[in-house]
Length: 146
Image (cartoon, rainbow, N blue to C red):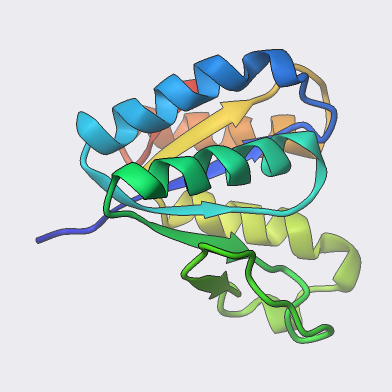
């Protein structure tokens, strides 16, 4: 069985008003697309909201949840309760500290089947989503925009 994976990226100031839409998107990815493994970061409103939604989904579905940790070599990070572990992208130890999150996000876009995103501002999130959209045109990833 081929494991299907999903990554999340969104603006740190994402409004909590999108939570219902996020819940529906996660449920659809599990029940319709067959996603079994989810990876999320830990910075800002979006990541916090996603973590809560995934923990609730795990109570109803057999899924795995991983925390993306771009600075794992520099700090000891325990995954949140109900998470299955952390993910530190290979090769990241050679990336300058200030670029670690950007490179980690690119790695996840390159190594995920699906991306769920909330991106309504310019900046690094927008750049990663635009990169993902180029990959989507090549049918390398499927994006859900919230």
